[in-house]
Image (tube, rainbow, N blue to C red; front, top):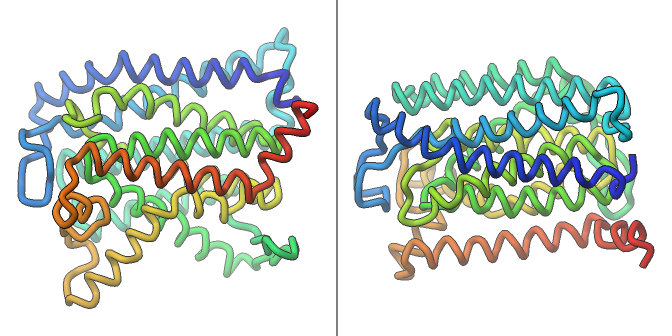
Length: 342
């Protein structure tokens, strides 16, 4: 399927996920308020009143509804578009939804019951290992300069993939510290990844990231400062899992365009911030899982005097620049220009 011929399917996924999130979020907020699922006010958090914290449910529902809707359209016998080129594409989509559902449950359990850090880490590891059963294993990396591939044996690929999953999920979790920050970053990153995937004919990755971007955009009006609801661990872990998985999907089927390097660049801010947090806590003798106000987004407020909206908009701008850089380096601009006949 050419990217242009089925573009309406991607637009449908974007609109369905955005509208579903817009409609579902108030209902999830009402549920959270009714059952007392509120994020408390403390010295580390920036919101001033207890806020419903299971917004990830709305994002997940919007994402799943969009994917299943488009999947249903694409698989009908009268559909003119060969959206899924092979059976493995459908298998990948099912595996992603299965793993995403499991990690959502882990996040919800933590939001509701407050899991110990060790138990949450074990649960994340189990979900990552189950995802690998669907073939989500990093098979190789590509040298961006020579374009030569370095293939990994299973005893290297599996630990590397596990590290990728755990690192991405926790990096995304750590950045969810300001109203609207993670949902906006998700939308920006998802749109850039969509453009890159579309340019390189990776239909499944394009579908997944545009559905995620739509869900984040639909959730954002309720999450932007002052937030009426926050994502919680359910939302942040789910988003991290999706980003980690689409990176592996692309790495196995295309070249540098949707490889591990592109998401690393687009999501460089949360990844670098997480690495800095680990180093900072180790140097101070604190536990790695111990929360603090040393994250980049916290420093913008408590050290440099920005308000929440200013800090969030500044980080949006940084993510936009990183996304544009990834688009250029991946060759996406050249591919899109060629497809457009310019």
